[in-house]
Length: 231
Image (cartoon, rainbow, N blue to C red; front, side, top):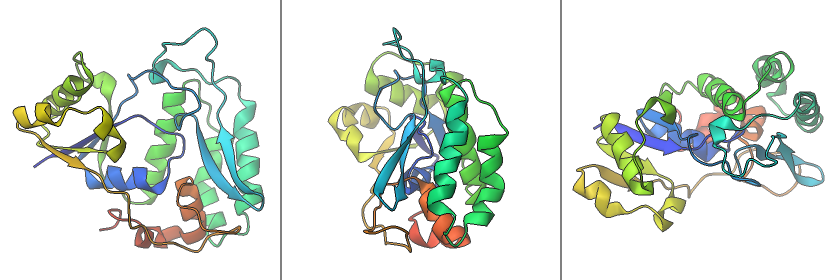
């Protein structure tokens, strides 16, 4: 029963994103989809003494209203040093800062990225490596893409030899479950509820921040606060 998930890449996603990766056999980055502004594709939240703060990767969007995520270019290089400075300022007192920074800092300060998809993928793969997530990560561009929202998902699952499709609950608004049933593919809605709190800096606890928050604060113990990682 091969399990497949098909999800757009996000910038340093939250822990639930990585739990979904760990829950399937193949995780397909759905970056053939249209880029959406003010979304998780190019930004995420960290915790600060002043409350949650956005880290946003600048991208070139002027006049490119229909561009795909994998066509979206990063605008400039200064953002990387600024993001790393914010991360250091707000997490240097975290218990596992030095350990995580040893592999994370070079990704910001030494590597160069021109496309948002490449940046997102590089960071996602690096976090998966740290968490010992063995799931195969592929790109939707490797597949033939059919017309229709649900039809395309079903067809990608067929091509990937998937017997079960794992979807985020927000997709209930547009996914036609009948098409999966007709194709003989089990449709399962991923459950993000029930996460325990973990030791966290700066005020009231927040689940909806980048996974870097969990890694800096808990290190190798991060899997204790996740659903599928390390299960």
